[in-house]
Image (cartoon, rainbow, N blue to C red):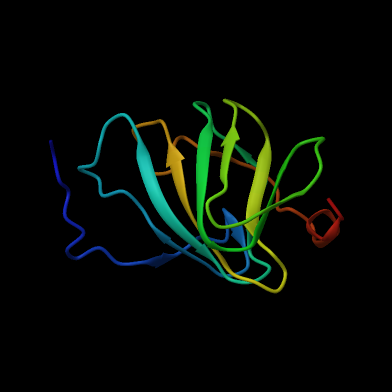
Length: 133
């Protein structure tokens, strides 16, 4: 067993190269597991990721709030507390909060880096985000 204390960890604002809107992120500390990176991510209403991929896939576990997720070519899906979303390796997707509600999720990336080797791409447009699922 190994415990990595959160002492001294601080939430950091998510970079504009990754997100649209205000997002706060607590990432795995550098001395975390070499097999998985876990981040707690809080999306303020309307905030969302850019389109992106993960070479090893990604798992989201929604803690609180209401959000949206979409894979390329698929419908927008509403997600809420307790929901778990799996994205396959290389699957292009985005996720974020609903327009009028924040959302907090755990992002689990099976990779050694804190962002899971994410391939960040272009922003999700307001039209794409507002599309009905």
